[in-house]
Length: 270
Picture 1 (tube, rainbow, N blue to C red):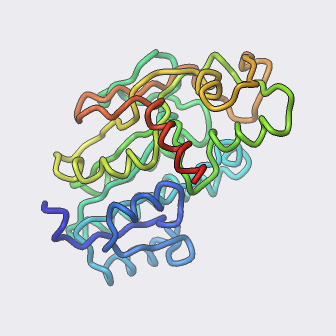
Picture 2 (tube, rainbow, N blue to C red; picture 1 turned 120 degrees about the horizontal axis):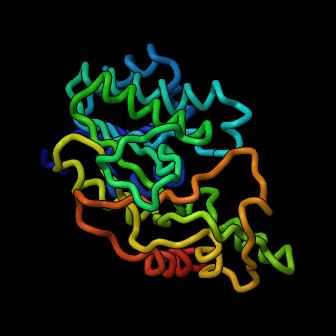
């Protein structure tokens, strides 16, 4: 597939990741949640039939991990059944689907996860809903690339970096857990990776910036007044996996998250 000559549709174009995808695919048809309700099967089928794209990039998701615990039905519709409807439509028009999943499909019982590892018993609603999305895509379409990502940060949406910067100005000390480990991922780097993955064979991919850290270590690279704490000291409605490190064995490695963070900080201070 020659990306420059194909018709591309981006769903979720106004989200944090969607914004950077639109820069990489400037000629794409761009739909936001105001344009399409991915939980409405008939609307999804009709919209994709009308546009008739060669490539569909689905960046729409309900990513509020805590909110998913309170609104479980919405989480499973948006993150689970919605991607299945998109896959069904892609199969009908002969389009390739790029879809973004999450490290939270894994329960954290292993220190690292390969693309070939089978997710078992995600420990929160968000993870279970995203796993359902993976399953529904595989049921409805052969030509898909499911990209699992983790700890996403970008200029155009709520993210951990901005939360830390805000709290740092409001509090003398910011407590951050030091017993959950993962790999931060910059939306710009992720968006620029898509053209490579489109050319690869169908399947599941792990795409993150390199470098493993705890949330505390990530926070410490952003602000100076953070202090470590345990997950037990900072209880939340949704349980988080202790380890959610995604290992990439299928594509070229991306740069270290600390390098990506430097670029992010430069951009936000312009």
